[in-house]
Length: 91
Image 1: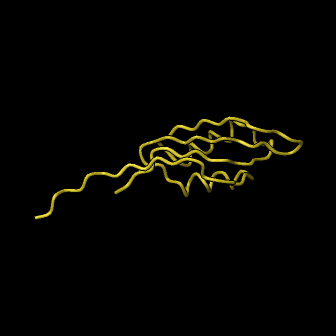
Image 2: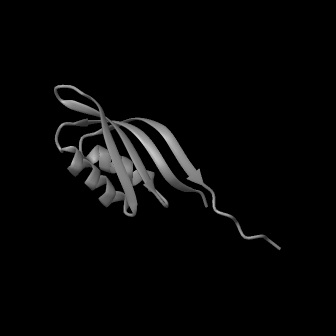
Image 3: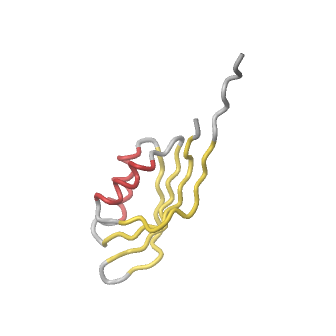
């Protein structure tokens, strides 16, 4: 079964919650993963982020849900790493 190991997302979020709260909430939703966020642009009400999520099997739906629950929106998926697992030989 294929496993998602890395996703790089372009995300727009309001200033509140702050970046620490925002990334912590994503980690809490996706479980065993790491999240790195870089602010690319900031205006009066929003921040544009590059969000990098890495893990053994990232639940993309949970990541997207966490972003939306905090008032953010996913603009694009900019990079993905998916790894297939070997299947047992059939007889």
